[in-house]
Length: 286
Image (cartoon, rainbow, N blue to C red):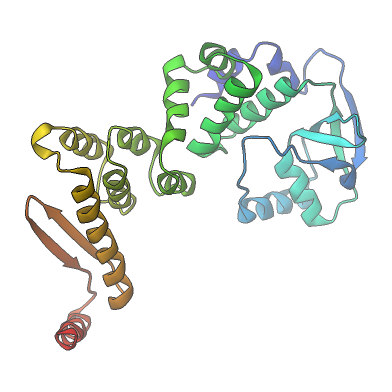
C-alpha cells in the first residue's frame, strides 16, 4: 500500500502524526514508567528481534521521533503511537523518553493507532481486520468512513473484516504468515470447516496457490462432490491426523494426497542412505 494513499485519506488525523503540523503540540520528556500501552490498539504481536534492532538504533542515534501520548484521567499517559519505541527504550533502561502530548478521544486514539501501523506495514491481516472491526463495531464508523480514513476502497475493508469469520486454526496461520490474506479470502468459499482447515494446511506448506484454493472451494460446493457432512468430516480428519502421525513417527515431511477413492503417500528423504534407512524403518513397521 502506498503511503501517499493513506495520507490523502487522513484529513485532520494526518496532522496528528506529522511533527511539522501547524497545530500547537506540547513536546516534552516523560519518565518511561509514566507511560502505559493502549491495550485496545490493533497491533498485538511485537517481534523481539525487531525491538532489539530498534533499541540498537536508539542507542546509536537517539530517539528521532517522539512518542505520541494522551493524558489519562486516572493519572499517567497512554501511548497512542510509538509503542515499539517505548518497548525499545525500556529494553535500554532509559529513564525518560521524548513525547508529544495531545488531548485525544478514544476514537481518535484508535484511528491513529491503525494508521500508524498501516503506514509502517506492521500489522498482520488479522490485526488489521480486527482494527477495522473495532472502529465499526465499537465506535460506530461505517465501512465507507473507515475506507476513507485509511485511503482504501470499501470492498477492501469489507474483505479484510470477513477474514475474522475464519476458524481459529486458520486465523493463527494468517497471524503467523503461514498463509496470505489472499488464501484466507479464498478459504471463505468452503462450506465445510474441516475441509477448509485441511486445505489451509496444504496451502501453508506451499502446496497450493490462491487460485488453486479458489478452485478447490468451487469444487467442494458442486453437487456431485458433496458427500454427507458426517462422512466428509470423518474422511478429512482421518487423512489430516494420519499425515501428522506419520510426520512425528518418521521424523520427516509427509504428505497424504487423497481424491475420488485413490491417493498417494509422499515421503521426504535426503540421500541414498536416508532412503535406505527409511525403507528399513517401514519394513520393521510391518
